[in-house]
Length: 192
Image (tube, rainbow, N blue to C red; front, side, top):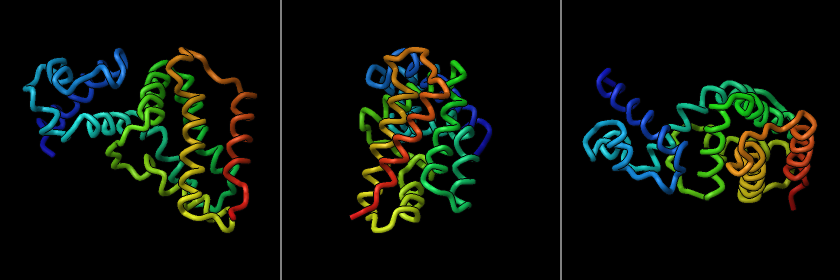
């Protein structure tokens, strides 16, 4: 990508980030993002295709680096369900310790808990790799059941870490441990 296009995309991401974190997903329009970035009204559509793809790109760019290494390592190793859950939760704990990280978690929670259809491009922002890991650990578990369990698990996890109504609440080590035990138990139940 040419540097001008990268700079333009980054300006749009920064503008979207500012508006989304202030106003929330529903209140932000593509036109507002373009105006905030000082760009043509069609810039978001040209560079991203849609509001959903812009938001997915923003979350992947901001949360992906913290998430990528730990979860990639999990996939390469033979881990049990609890170790997988710990690997999912550990980066969230780190992000929640930082005010900017909490804002991104709030935005991610709004998108996921609002059941928005997002155009994720990163492998780790989909359920697929988690479904594969869970099925390696729980005998008799169908793809659809594993997907449903992870969907519920991520809703619970993101509800705890990204609940916009919780403000700057940071989970204690004991609360994180309870969450990980609870999610692991729900994921681990033998399939039918």
